[in-house]
Image (cartoon, rainbow over all chains, first blue to last red; front, top):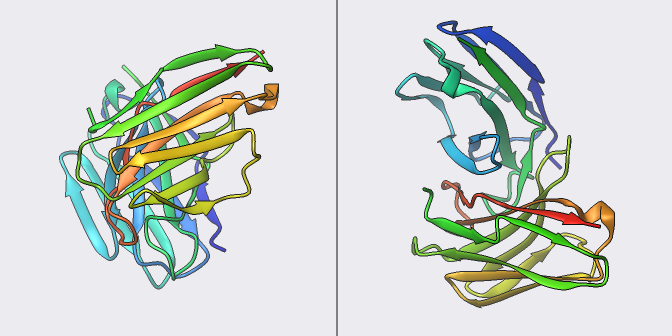
Length: 112
Length: 113
């Protein structure tokens, strides 16, 4: 079964700083998900990627399949980016999104 | 707005009560999920329904009873819960079995007294 580790657990930064959140997993996968959870509890899917790099606005996600590692970057961070960022991967290589293992999340706080 | 709607958003119930959580999606997805998120713990998959058939029951106690009457609606019936069942319950939907995106609801925060 896949184990997912995220780092750091908590991150506080000044507005405008470049942010990096890391995710490592133990078992080969078909795709990795990055999710954002706001204080109210709702979760939004940010990225689903299986190779290389994806960019959406100020958010960039990269994945290295061989090293079983992914990073989420935020450029020009803003207080509205404050949230918990969660990495999720299929529980084994035989599964897709129907059975995911989730990281414990990285709580990001951006100070104005 | 993700297209997945959960009600109620907050629920307080006693240990002897019976209540239900509701989830609705009109995204054309064929799979719906219940997840539990307890404080300081990762999301845990509870149930998966594909085409209204339960395909996963992740060792969830029988005091939680899911129901999927059609591909757009999912319920979680709650009875004789324990205080440790207090958590955020999240519904999600997707296309089953691929690596596509999951769409989550806003969650139902449950407090069991």
